[in-house]
Amino acid sequence: MIPELPPELRTKLHYDPDNAKAALENEQREISALNVQRAAELAQSKLSESQEKQYQAAVELWQKSLATIKGKIQQITEDGIFLYRENDTHPVFIKHADPGGYVDGDIVSIQAAPCAAYQYGDVRGSGSTVRAFDAAPPPRPTPEEKK
Image 1 (tube, helix red, strand yellow):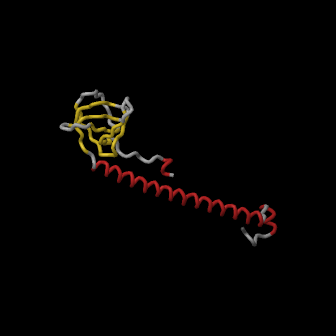
Image 2: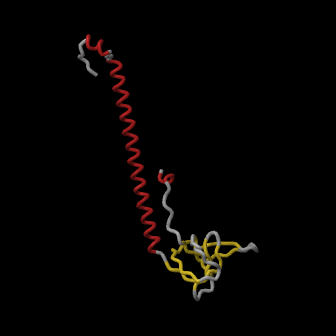
Image 3: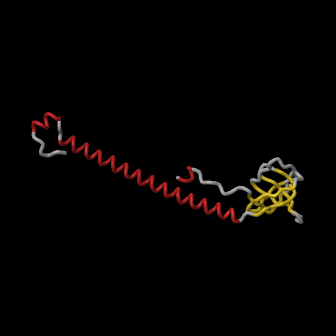
């Protein structure tokens, strides 16, 4: 806004102080809105960094708890593999284990971390609970979870 613009120049340039003031206020509102948006994006990126750090910590903990499970495959299912470890009378279940071309009866060695017990039912309707391990690392947060 130029308050002391000579009248002939105002006319020549079609300068209207009220329009200039309104345009300045609009520009300031747009700048404020952009600043708010940028602040929100920055906060979101920091949240994402925090979640990434939590994920990395979970992966490190998972890696430290890995054990090598050796045994004979009893059964391969969609969820994982049942196997008997050497000198063990009870099967264990390994979630997310890649069957990798193995068949029932094969001897395998799989790295997995201990996890919650696995419950399953048989065809007669009775259920059993066995010790379980998980061969997959913790899932990475998805963009939807980060928001």
